[in-house]
Image 1 (tube, rainbow, N blue to C red):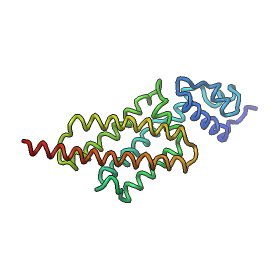
Image 2 (image 1 turned 90 degrees about the horizontal axis):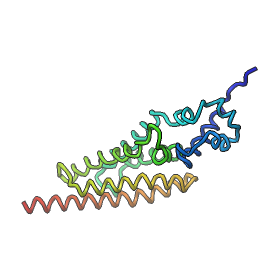
Image 3 (image 1 turned 60 degrees about the horizontal axis):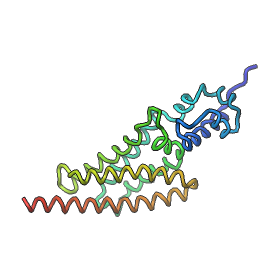
Image 4 (image 1 turned 135 degrees about the horizontal axis):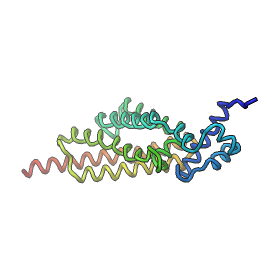
Length: 215
C-alpha cells in the first residue's frame, strides 16, 4: 500500500526549507541540506517535492511577494500622510505594527526575498522594495516642501538610506529570533530613521526656500 503524504511532515519540510534558503541562499541550498534540517531522509523529501525549485516556489509565491510589498507601501503611505514624522498618528502606528507582525511571522522568508533570492524570479525583490519606499516618500516630501520635483541630492540620499534599510531589516531578522528582541530592534531603527527623514525634509524645505529667495 502506498504511503500517504502527511501535511504535518510537509509543513516541517517547508519550514526547514525556509531556514536553509535563508542561511545558504537559493544557490547554496540543497535538497540534502533541507532534509537534514527537517530530520527526514533526502528520499522522503523527494516524495513530497520534485526538487529544489518546486520546494522554493511552494514557499515563495507571487502572492506572498506582492503581499509583502503591499504592506510596505501601506506603511510608507501612512507615514508620509502624517503631519509629524516624529510624532506618528494612530494609522501610521497601526500600519507599522502590521508590517512588523508580517516580518516576525515570516522571518526566514523575508530574509530570502530581501537578500537570498539570486537565481530565482524574485531576485529583483530588493529593488522593488526600495522603489516601494522611494515613490511615496518622494511624493510626500514634494508635497510637504512645496517643490514639484526634488533635487538630485534628496533622491541620492533617499536611495542610499533605503538601500541600507534593506540590509538593516535582514540583519535584524537574522540576528534575533525572539519576538520581543525583533520588536525592540525595529523600534530603535525606526526611531533613528524617522528622525533622519524629518531632518531631510527640513533641509529640503530650507534649500527650496533659499532658492526661491535667490531668484
